[in-house]
Length: 136
Image 1 (tube, rainbow, N blue to C red):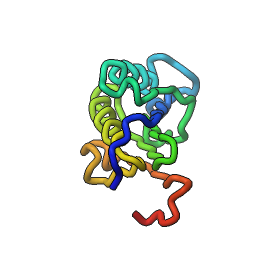
Image 2: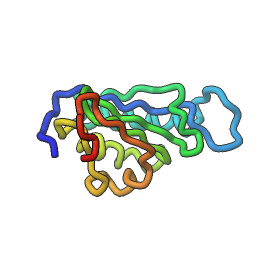
Image 3: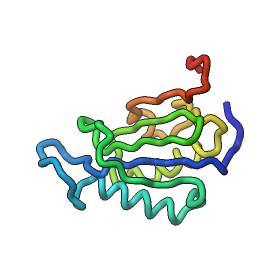
Image 4: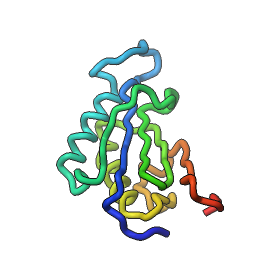
């Protein structure tokens, strides 16, 4: 689909308020979402993606039934929203998925090209503004 473009600015937002069901609302550094944010930020800082991916915290991504949530976006690219991510074992696949994402011209990631753990955890994708036929 797309061609290589590692110079685009990619942002991955991580919901830092994601928490297990039954836990009170509010921020807590022990929340799984915050732990995922810290682990992903550290992993990206030590990877080849350090200059092309910005890891940012988000207060809430409204994926409460499927924590922990992340959102990937870049310029005029497809935007992806994933749930069911865990700081203990999802970080490697998130980094792999981000590497694929930044190496496309339009951010389009067919299901079978995404890492296995990122296939069933997708909650949605939004086409770029300029796409006239979103039935890719």
